[in-house]
Amino acid sequence: MILTITANPSVDMSYQLDKFNIDGVTRTDKVIKHAGGKGIHVGYVLHDLGEEVVHSGFVGGKLGEFIEEGLEAKGQKARFIKIKEPTRNCLAILHEGKQTEILEAGPTINPAEREEFINKLDQISQGCKVISMSGSLPKGLDPSFYKEIISYGKNKGIFVAVDTSGQTLKDVVNADIKPDLIKPNETEVADLLGEEITKDNIKDALEKSPLSEIEYVIVSLGSDGAVVKVGDRVFKASVPKVTAVNPVGSGDSSLAGAIFAISRDKKPEEVIKTSMTCGLLNVLTEEIAHIEIEKFDKYYEQILVEEI
Image (tube, rainbow, N blue to C red; front, side, top):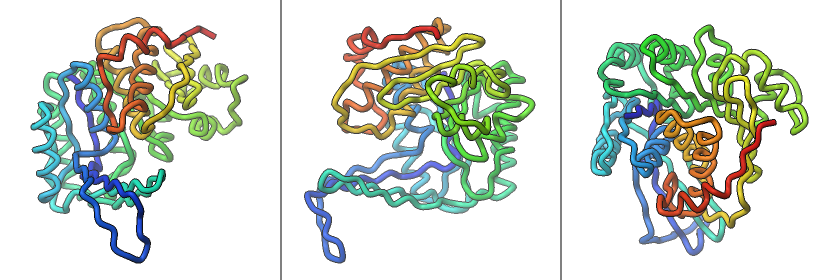
């Protein structure tokens, strides 16, 4: 069983429009509403892969209830902490080949709610062999929240993955107790090390502290695949060219594939191929954070992984 933590989840609403009438009325009957947030997306793909999933984070109000009920209806456990302020909405408007997003900031987590989460980590993570934390932190939380969970997981012998950015990523990577896996892009690696990163020096960059002290570092290169450090080895993964239907959620899908394979003690090359396959399958579907598992083997065999 794998635990995903989404500190600032949302109810994601998608409106599909033939035309978006600015300063006018637009009607649609093509509406999708579901539980969202990066960690929840990771859980969706893990579930597609056949893994048992537990979701946690903070939820409040009727929208929080919608998230819990929606996840449980999909056969996924929900162990969220209830908060006073309501969970946010996030709106995506798909119109004329474009996507316009409106993202609410979300609630503020008060100190008592933060403390309750940390104090209940034993219950929240019960039966889980992996903890995966994704996304930015809501108001009221700072990077110490992630760092406490990393320390908890490492002390319990639980594999810990973190997918975040900005100052939170810097603080997590530079902490005394580090996660087992991070998933930065090239720009974030450059920011972490304070140097320019190119395809020619990325291997050397991943072998420098503090990245050298993290077991798995997955650097996404978009449609060009990824460069992945596993221990003291560095690999380049190449993916076949496909026509993308919807790339949103591919990073979360890629993370899900990696931690799924790691949880099953797969070899580094198999971990990387599973990760890349899940990211690729996501772009081939309209639904965010979803893979058609019957296509998995076909694309898995097309992923090329070589040590560099």
